[in-house]
Length: 134
Image 1 (cartoon, one colour):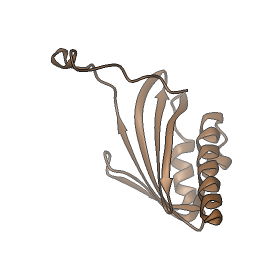
Image 2 (tube, one colour; image 1 turned 30 degrees about the horizontal axis):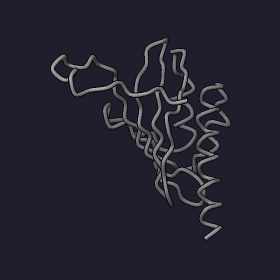
Image 3 (cartoon, one colour; image 1 turned 90 degrees about the horizontal axis):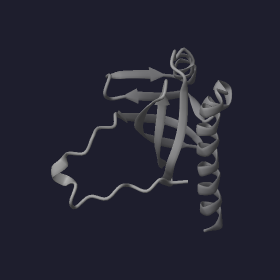
Image 4 (spheres, rainbow, N blue to C red; image 1 turned 180 degrees about the vertical axis):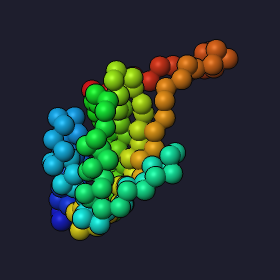
């Protein structure tokens, strides 16, 4: 049982380091978590990037100033999800990253993006604001 707990703690720490490296702009550390033949899918744009080097190349050329805030990382075994806010040139975008992990490396990531929108007035009575996570 302890080896499973150690493995999960290791994966969680590696994912945290991935996002922290993304925030620092450390492109090599950011992509160290990917297998050489990893796949990254962006369903909204229909793009697939095959291979760590192509994943790194497309992210390395991003023209916007980016910042990453991790809201939470959840997972078990070989499937992990990171809920993030990625700010591009000061504009927040909500992101959900689903990572499949084999032998400690990401082999397939699917990343979804959603822009914020104002809540409809008709939902004001039953709604409450989401608390800010530290």
